[in-house]
Structure formats: structure tokens, C-alpha cells
Length: 418
Ligand SMILES: NC(=[NH2+])NCCC[C@H](N)C(=O)O
Image 1 (cartoon, helix red, strand yellow):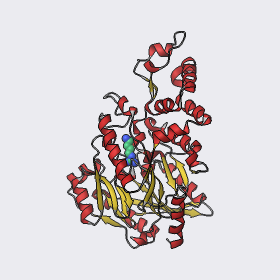
Image 2 (cartoon, protein in one colour):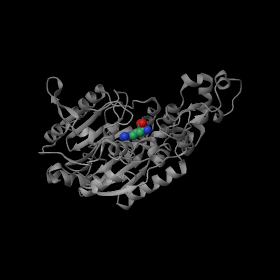
Image 3 (cartoon, helix red, strand yellow):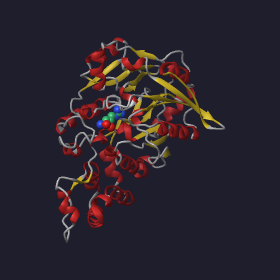
Image 4 (tube, protein in one colour):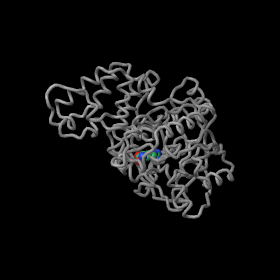
């Protein structure tokens, strides 16, 4: 990238205008979600459906998250917290009304109870509404009403009238900034779908995001942010597997080409497994031309190369080995893979615990979970600074530092600066 691009990128950050076109340039502003009461809704009966592998200890999860946020602040990153941002958003009466609308599902509640809930939520303050939107509401918490609703009588008091959103913690997935546009994801799992309604409200009504232009839409085919890697300015990799579908990758490509945001999209098939639900569970960038990658994926990952085509809209080439296709699209000879060189059992254990899911704060500086001792040691051997954080509780939802962060402003760096 030319110097003028990095200069214009500093201008973006001074003006606090969202802009992200790569994975590793100095991080300026990030959206996180400090886990709240929604974690207290998890039980052994619902955790699978709510996509948690165990029942986290909420207080400790908050401590871990506070430490994560503190590391970012210490390094000069501005941290926006979703709960604060949502509360401020709901001060706008239009956002408040729209928020109520997203919470009330009359197919679940029936018309009578839906009316009761709607008029109750319409009267609560922004803080209370934001808590209900995130933590949900059980039938026993619904306000009392005249008459006997069959729905109320037949539901168990602990059933959810409004579902909780424990995966809000993983802000990576529900929205993605690509240059100066935000793509609101289309989340594949029912337990997560309502998350996008909340970020949608924030980007539509929070004063900080006035004028934010959208790329892609929440109603399109599934695309999740954990699958989207901005390999370099102009180059996007999209994992296609358990979450993002082939149609999602294709329509995202169409949309970013139409908006002239990138010149190449690599569609990367990944195993449709819980362990590899997103591309960022097997590969994240640690430098402008370097990735850390699950060793078993290193030689098997492939990519289709998509480029704009005047006639057909999108031209598809390949597939070719992922590392080759990526290097070609990035205009470099080789994408360096930090060889974690692990034996297959350790590699598998640390992949499961999000060892490959690092968040870069700057080229060669990453945040990683402390528990992945082998992967972290290899990263350090390769000259990467690893800032370790605890993740025993926050990690029980199967997400690491990258999953728990949505970059909003990052400086531009190009792969040839690596
Ligand atoms: N970008 C990521 N890898 N996110 C992890 C999300 C984990 C979350 N429990 C889910 O299943 O959806």
C-alpha cells in the first residue's frame, strides 16, 4: 500500500471515523461486550442450544473480560462496551421503539401476552430495556396482567419469553467493518440471530455511528464475522463451513465488489465442525504477511479466488492451496506460517482452546489465551510478542481474543511492510 493510504488512515482515527482494512495494523478502537446477566441464564439443560460447552462462572468471566479490556486500554486502544453503547442508543425514542419491537415475538407469546410485554417494555428506561434485550426474560418475570393467558399458564415459569444472548460476548461475529462500511452479519444459529438486531440499532442510532454506511445485509445468506479475515487491504478471506454458507460468501463478495471495497475474495472451505466453526478458529494473522495456523489445516486448506467480472459479476478461479492463493492475492511471494510445530494431540487440544485465535494489536503483537502454552511459546520463538490473558470462563463459549472483539478503527499496513 502506498504512503498516502496510511496517511489517510491516521486521518480516519483522528476523526474517529470507523475504518478497518487489515488484521494487524495498530488497533485504535474496538467494540467488546462485557458479559452480563445473560450468562446467568445458562443451565445444563440449555447450554448446548445456547452454544456454550459448560456453565461459566459469571463473576470470574467478568474479571477475565475486565483484564482483557484493560490490556487493550493500556496499549492505547479505545474500548467501546456494547452494553454502554446500547443503553446510550436506546435514549433515542426511535431506537427504544425499535428495540421493543425486536424483543416481542408474538408467535411465541400469542397476541395477548405480546401486547402485555410490548406495553411494559415501552415504559421502561433505556438501562432496563437494554438488560432485557441482552439477558432475555422468563415467563415468570413477565409483568402481571388481567385475565388468564393460556400461553402464560402452559409455559414453565423458567421458559424464555425473550431469549437471552450469551454469545454477545463474541462481538466479532455479529458485525464486521470493511474499510469504512459495516456489514451486519446474518448469523446462522438460531441462538444468535437476535444479536444482529442489537448491533443494527447501535449502528443506526448511536451518535458515534451517524452516517455509517452499510455493506451487506442481515437478511442475506449466512455470513459470520469469525469467518471473515481481512488478509490485506483489498483482500478478504471468507471461511465457508458450519456458519457461513457458499451463498453467503458469494453474496458478500458481490456486495464488497459492488462497493469497491476489495479486489479479491478467497472462499475457504473449512470442516463443518464445532471445533472449526469459523475460519478464525484455525487461522489468524499475527503480522502483515504472517499467520498462526492449526498445523493440520496448514497443508489441507484450499481457496477459491473470486474477483469482480464485468459480465458475470463474480469470476471464480481455483481452487488452489490457500497459502498460495492468499499470497497471490496479497501480492507477496509467500504468506509466512508461524510453525507451531506441535504434536497432533497438543495441537488439537490448543486449537480447541482457541490457541490460533489471536487478536493483533499491532504488527507482531498479539493477545492470546495463557492456557495455550505451547502455541504461545512457538509464537514467541518466531519473534511475536504475546500478551497473555486468562480465558477459563470466557473461553467456555468456545471463542478467543479475536472472537471477543470487533475492530472499528485500525491503521492500515500492507503485507510488504511485514
Ligand atoms: N469468531 C468466533 N470464532 N466466534 C466464536 C463464537 C462461539 C459461540 N459460542 C458460537 O458458537 O457461535
